[in-house]
Image (cartoon, rainbow, N blue to C red):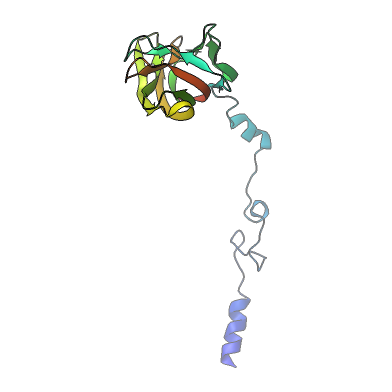
Length: 196
C-alpha cells in the first residue's frame, strides 16, 4: 500500500513550465509555445543565405583534338586551332575566352579537372593549370601513361589557386617520354571561390 501511494505522488508531480514534458506526457511539445521562444521572420534566413559564389563549370566532349608535341618536356596549351575547344556552361565572376580563364575577383579558389586522352602505348603525359599572368603553375601537375591509339586514358587533377583580379589561367599538357602526340577526347572542369 505504501509503494502505490508513493508511486501516485511521484507520478502526479508537476513539471515546471518550459521544461520538456510540460503538460505533455510524451514530451512532444511545441518549444515556441512552451518555452516562450520568439521567432524571427523566415525572410531573415533568406537574407543571410549567400546568393552566389564565383565559379565556373565547363569542358568539352566527343572530340579528337590532336596536340602536336614538338619538343619533349615542353608545356603546350590545351586548345585547338581556333582557341574554342573549351566550353563554359556556366560562370560567375570568371570569364572564359580563347580557352583561357580570366579571374575577375581576387581570392583563393579550388577546382577539379577530369580529362580523357588517347596516344601510343607507354607514353607519359602530364597536365597542369598555369597562370600566364605570373608565369607560375597552380598547385601540382599530375600525369598518366597512354594505353594505345583508340584507348582512353583518364586523368584527374585537383588544384588550388591564389588569384589576383585579372589573372589569366590555362590548362597545359606535356610529353615527358618523347615527341609522340596526344589526342584529347573529353574533359570537364569545375572551379569555385573559397575565400579571400
